[in-house]
Amino acid sequence: MTLARAFRIQAAANRLANHRIAQALSALAPADFHAPRVGFFPSLAATLNHVLGVDRYYVGALHGETDGHEAWARFVPATTAAEWAARQADSDQRLLAFCTALTEAGCAAEVAMPRGGGRVQRDSTGAVLMHLFMHQHHHRGQAHTMLTGAGLAAPQLDEFMMPSEAHLRAADMAALGLDETAIYGP
Image (cartoon, rainbow, N blue to C red; front, top):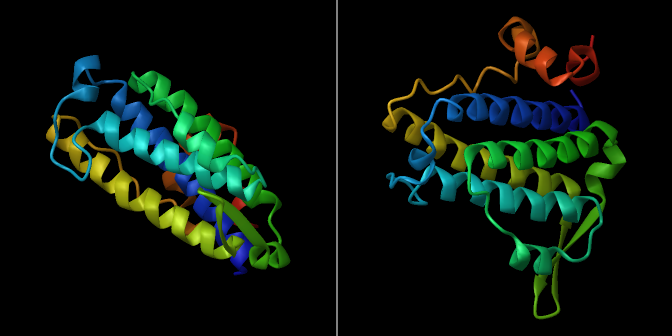
């Protein structure tokens, strides 16, 4: 498996996992989205908005946007689960489109990430994607625990990676209009 294909699978798994979290959130009372929870961030809203804000920053940088620091400062958190789900879906689609078009040479390309004060961090596309996917897994795991603490059946989030597990993601892939072969290969 090439690195570019692995990133494409990660981006699809990210989209599927966030789709399942959004479905779980739809059963949550609106006040429970902001209710205090145990975690690095003190609520589902704060945790998921953090993921969204960071995703938007890095996905923007991957697409060559140069206003990342300013965009981060302008970020307005979603106030409802439905709003978060829609905005996260848009971000996930941008990431998936980027990774779908990614080549092996593109994995080594430099990404410039404005950090404020004139400082620009530079890393390879592959390093940025690895960091971004780890960040998503880390905080999405916390949201998963918070969903359980809210009395909901937390969704299965870790079955998307293996090509042989298509039957476990088929309904979500169809609901999202994703092509199994385009992402996972023949």
